[in-house]
Length: 431
Ligand SMILES: *Cc1c(COP(=O)(O)O)cnc(C)c1O
Image (tube, rainbow, N blue to C red; front, side, top):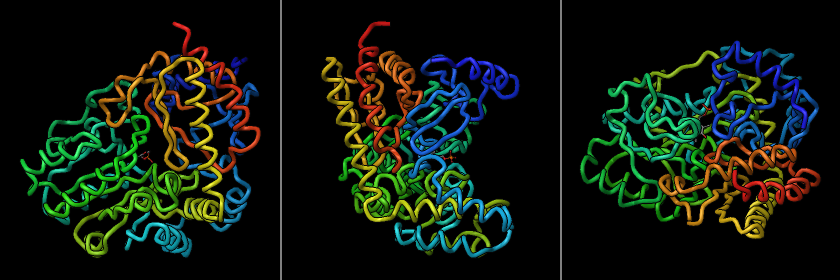
């Protein structure tokens, strides 16, 4: 595969951006080599500047449930751009999107739009502390909630991929009230609550973890968190930035029937434009300015282009059979990963929830962050590069989830399945 032009352009990017990128995981540091430079995306495919085609299982890290440049989304954006790209004032599209969000997530009695998942994370923590008058926040090892200081302790995604145990520049004082428990371990949560339950403002988690690879929750674990937080007067926050509209149209809260007090949304809700939201119980959300004393604001929040992209995306995604079709393809992919690895005698754990999937080259079940550390990274890296060479783009890290879109049918999935043998053969060969 010729990537000459990509090499040139990445060299140029390095003269402008630290590591050549505007977000760390894009740099391929974990898997080695250098990233290709995208020229455009269409449906399930990304094309690079050398004309190579890749089946894209990242989908902009989750947002693109319809695939790239879906005609309905592109048309809606054209139409909206002519009416203005930002108002900094109230407009009708905000309520239209909010209505769809609340139909799918009834727990968002009130909500507020922001521009990213990180912003939603900053806001829910401030709000939970403001509402409860308490300081401590309980999170889980391997969960990523954006890059706010207070949530960077033992985080997943790029922090994990780059092996940064703690982030430089985050003062100890910023995380002194951040407590960390083990995912899927009710015991680890109970221990912390019995030590300082009355000081805990909120428990925050990815209800299905996607930022240290895919971790599937024990439904009993989620129910226990609901009961424990209620008992101690702490809020339960579901970070559904990745899982929202993805694991189920109504997110993990609908899939597992657990109603959190607050929810963070991002990724899909922006339909490929910068967008996010948080919301939840009315009496909690009413603590926000201008109604209450907890300040939160944003120049571009409720941006009309993002509203329209999110709205159009969700309208298509909600059409009967759409989600089921993409989830079916996801299952087919996971089955093929399992059987392909077995054919090559490779231990592999692969799972999916809705349209989100993950796999580890690991001989034993992976249920917590600690378990992920037994995965064979070198093997993953060989698999990744062989698949890329075959024109299939998985996340460039052994610790990221993958995503399937409505566009991943026909040629995209068939090409992927055909290419797996080459990937597993490379994974098996020693370095
Ligand atoms: C991506 C992600 C975030 C951060 O969202 P950004 O839009 O990248 O700031 C937060 N939480 C989860 C679970 C995510 O996957």
